[in-house]
Image (tube, one colour):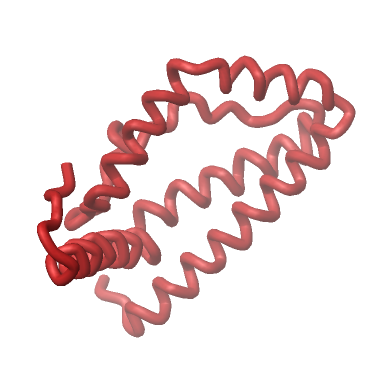
Length: 141
């Protein structure tokens, strides 16, 4: 829970602290080996489905950030708390059934969805690799 400001200067300080939490957490995630592994998994999943089973999307239902573990030093602050509440609300809503209905209605576009998923995951993977090489100029092992 975010503390309630009593004046404008305190409100600005709270906003600054929350912004620092978010940017430092995003900085820790971008270029991390953890994100590299997740993005590589998506590239392989979408790529193999695009090549061998283009009429199906890969299943990623078991992916959970809490189970896989985040890198150390991750604290999204108030925005992270709001995201957790949004995830809980989405799990209790009909979003999954509506998404499934959308994919059932657009079954002829599955190869396109696979290609888009592959492309987006590949671009994000290359971006993450670029960030990693900028941060770590020399290998440590």
